[in-house]
Length: 552
Image: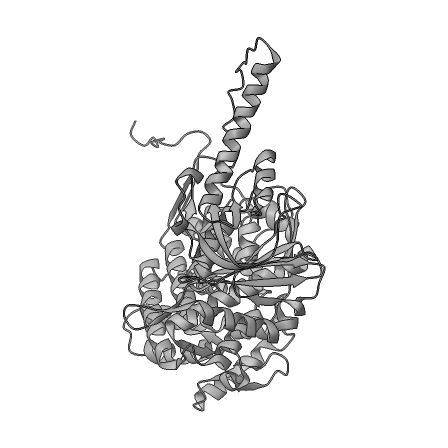
């Protein structure tokens, strides 16, 4: 068999090695980054995502776009994971993280073309990432929960360019008030905003400017009986996660009776059991019952007769939130319930909106609800996404206590410092550090491009300002001028910037480390579309051909 190739793969398997594998992977990752770059900044554009079921989502939220896209390329999915990690850790900055990752890989491709080994590039990127994260601390400004104006600017910056922007002044104030209400002291003397104590509810048909922050919970349910009271100044409230019903008989169960009186006795017995369940509730002193499951019609009658307000099929999340708002315990069996399990609070019914407003008044009660309003479902959905991101970044800022100016200011300053740092790095890793510095400047370039400005002129002006010692100089995308970002109120959390740089570097290094792709199926990305990936790479995003083609 001398000279014969050894066949170890199946007939349908395909394999890419070395330069082909690297080119394939980098092209797929860059295509993901390109798909969201146009959404970055106050002047970013929106994407319309249409699912296979015809559901429409209009958004410029990076993580929403990437998770909703029809992606089946494994390398592209790695970049989506960058956005998800950024969202989980920092709450915002997903587009920034993905854009930097894409630019790192673009610059890495140029280094690979110069015969620089991937190991040297990875080492250089790691050195640059560690140095940049350290420099962020030097660029940051301290902020506390009492610095309301700065926290409002953080919220406004996060919402700018999103559906919440038109009412960002009001919403930013609501967000800061909400975070302040749920901020608690930690054992080590710090402070943390516990978002478990915050609930978000939405309503359509009204202006976003009518959104409000409520001390307590909003329950979108009706009383189970029209004769039940709906308003209490100070009620004792039971939270129940089991049904106020009798157990269902087996499907094939049969009941044999000899005369009608036996049937009546059976029905009387059922009625008696239901009445005993209601009696058990009343014996605890409960005025109100929020039940996660069903309530039998006869039980509804007995509850109304005793003047007890009951709500059925409340969401599990609402029951758990009410536990925090009221300081109550969740009851699983009415027969074992005690007065100590009940929470204390006031209840008010808004007949116009069809909601119950529940406010805890007892000891241990804690929790607020942000009620967001909008004209249509699409408006409310995008408003909610923007507000959630702003809530996350404000909460993150309170915990971390550090902020930066935005508008591309940190990226340009970090790039300049990285170039100085690169002079002290030996070997080919120096080129990778410089490539990392160039990649960070994709943020101000993209901000300028999305605002219709000349990206080269904007970058030259920013570099000149930073060389002159203005470390906070950022781009005003509305005027095209260079201005101090912090003074202009464009403020970002330092934690989100550190996380974006870290996630982008790790993802780029993970892609660069792959030199062999072995697939059990077809590796070809040609799905019949005429369009390929960026730079004419084969098929661009693998299985994303259908997903992106239909969206972009």
